[in-house]
Image (tube, rainbow, N blue to C red; front, side, top):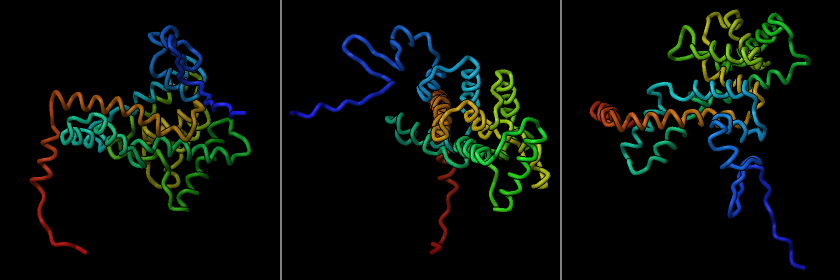
Length: 264
């Protein structure tokens, strides 16, 4: 008897000669023009349709991470386009590849860090005093090991990242201020008692906490940051088309270079 042909199950996109389905919905009739892109991205990742409040928090995260000026990801995208204007995909990919531990990757790092701390608790605190106690113990332990707190500090917003209180407020308004955000908020209140200085809770970190509270897979948190930054990089390329600066950036470095002896 011949082996039965193998099949591959998916709850995502599928099609036949007359229809396309996505997440069990008719794509043309039930999704297009009805479901927003942020809602769809959440739905695709979780395979459950989010509530309005979840969509609002999720889209606030996407907006927070879309663009932050001439960061390395934006500059490399513009320079790659200067070098290969026939490769829009290459320019976008170049910028996205720079999403690591210093830019964008903090979103995932912070979400994982907070989740790891929460997984060690026998019970979750029910008031700020309890969360402050957990936060102090966490910061002390990290300092003793010589490790940084993901999401703490910012190279520009030294006195406070404006995205942080706004995203926290939105999460509270939607009753989605969960344990990851509560711990992150407590770290913001208490870390100076251990470190001897006050650092801001940055936007990438609060986004990681909010995404974790939404129940999104920790393994995908950086992916959501990259999704947001893709929109920003398209904006960078659109502006480069209208008002190019990449060649000036290139020449400013090229003309300032100087030969030095080899240093083996």
